[in-house]
Structure formats: structure tokens, C-alpha cells
Length: 190
Image (cartoon, rainbow, N blue to C red; front, top):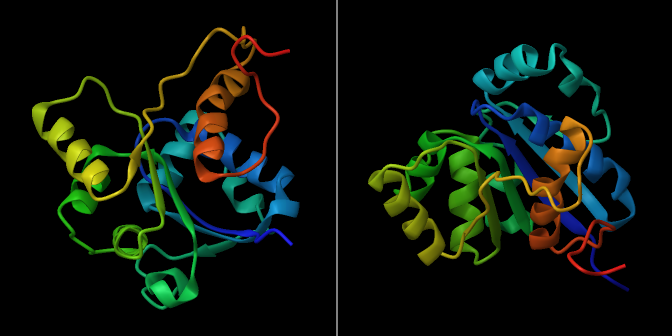
């Protein structure tokens, strides 16, 4: 029997709420592969979602457990809960910097610290551009610590027709990296 995934999703205040929405939608559709999904959204993430998507639909994902950004009693604040993957999507440069330097001042950064120390999978879908040398150095640090930097740089070879299809070109890569089995466009495969 295949082990089901226990996933942490953190949504930061970086622009790109469409990526978080598509990720949550796809995780909903992949429920047969998933044991639990814990979600952390910053206050800024909620405001950016409302601004960019014009709704508060993040409140409609009842199948996931939402945690307050300062809830250090959340199960994944400890390695003993055995969450195997953490996805930060979109990931702000400030969040990445705190993760890279080990500043565990909220649930997102504490959970990332736990994932790294336990040698589990951390995926940061960074969204900002261009990158400063500070950003690049933080990406290097996270990578050397075992994390995966997956820039939210959409691809176009699948000929996406909508914003959601375009966002899915990034989210599908994130889900591949997380080890979930998905159906998506594959270059030169039919």
C-alpha cells in the first residue's frame, strides 16, 4: 500500500494568489493520494487574494485544516507529526529570507525549519522578479539545506488559454516535485 502524503501549504503575501488557488484546487482533486493538508495563510496573503482574485474563496476549502500564522501548536510545528512535504506558494522573498536564515518567527517559517531539519521536501514557489544578490544567496542557502526553489515562471508550450491554465504550468511542476501523480502536459509526449 502506498503511503499517502501529509502536506503543508503556506500562502504568503507575494503577488500570485492564482497559484495558491490552482494549487488548492488541484490538491482537492488529488485527495485519494493525500492523508492531510494543513494550510497557513498570512494576513497579507488573504488581502492579496481578495485584491487579485476579487473574492474570499480561500474560505471554501473545508477539506483542509487551516491554521493561524502564529499557531505553534499546529502538528507540523514538530517533526513528530511526520508531514512529508511543505509547499510555500507563492513564496515572498521575505519569507524565503527568514527560512534561509533559520528565523522561526511564525508557523510558516517554523514548519519550514522542521521540514529541513527532518530532511523532508520543502518547495518554495518564489514569485518576485528581478532577483537581487541577496535573493540569489538566500536561494543558494535554501537549496544547500535541501529545499527546492521552483520559481513561479509559467511556461507556454502547452498553449494555455486562461490565467488558471497558465498558473497550472507552475503548479503542475510543484506537484511533480512533491511526488504526487498528476496528469499534465509533458513536453513531446502524447
